[in-house]
Image (cartoon, rainbow, N blue to C red; front, side, top):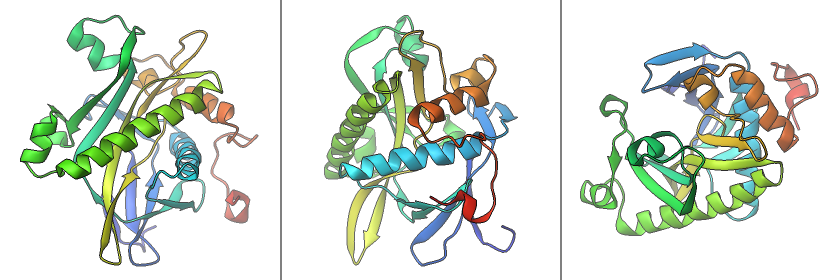
Length: 254
């Protein structure tokens, strides 16, 4: 990795220059952070699991026509992606009351919402990713009205599809965070789903017991973080029998 040019490093991933123009290599770290990076730990195997889970979900979404930046998985920790201009807006879909929504409105966690609620947050760690409105997004030029409509429609479609997919393996999609980017190809631009979809940015509870299998295990010191992520991978049918280990060479390829 030292011979590759690093383009960006975030809290959970590193981006390197890709093998071809317009591509990047996305490396998944084992780092876990919460509360705007005030809490930090290293969870062995988390990056491997997130890489596999995100790969699977991105591929399933592509099958129903959702455009994404994902190209293919390279190995247990890396995937090839298309380079996009990230829109600095985090889109959160909430299906069940949990987290900050419960705190802001005094709702008991687990309360079913009358319908899915979409919220927008300005992607800025220094400001704590503040809650924003559509007016903020268009007024400050982060996205146009047309782009925002496209993002909203894609968000609802992703949420609907993943809710059904997870329900089929006994998981409740409580909420999820999505990011989008502008992909330029031959002078044409389109909005695509970017970043990742994993237990780092989805709340996933067991349908029967409401056991939390996502990043809340880390946020709330519930323990067994890696085991929760591994259980999600097992239910999706993508976890190697040997568990989330780093394999070498062709053994990692599908």
